[in-house]
Length: 121
Image (cartoon, rainbow, N blue to C red; front, side, top):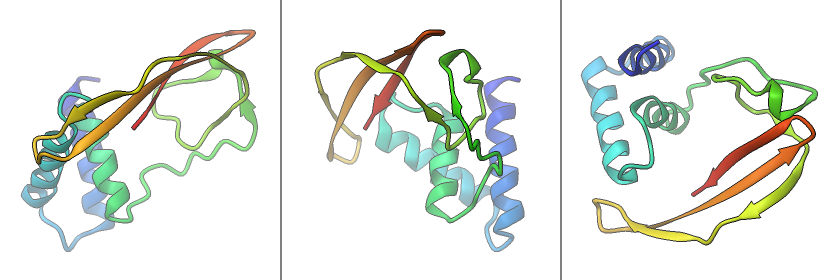
């Protein structure tokens, strides 16, 4: 699925849950969120943040068991992962287009099945 299709899927879910909003308004909110985040988000990620801020639940796939790294897949939300923190990278400061400062930290988590990068901001 290409980036535009992924974005459209999230926008449609927002519009289903919030019929009081227009498509153009939601896309404008996504655009603002992208500008705030600089190059740290893709359009789908920005749309997911907009949905969260609007109180829209996008996915009902709650995972009740702890997953292994090998079990992670795109689209999973609210998962628990048990592993070890293998690396903690320095905090990187960045300036959002609004002038506000943001911070980003990258972690490497691992278990017996593999490793995964985790970004905190």
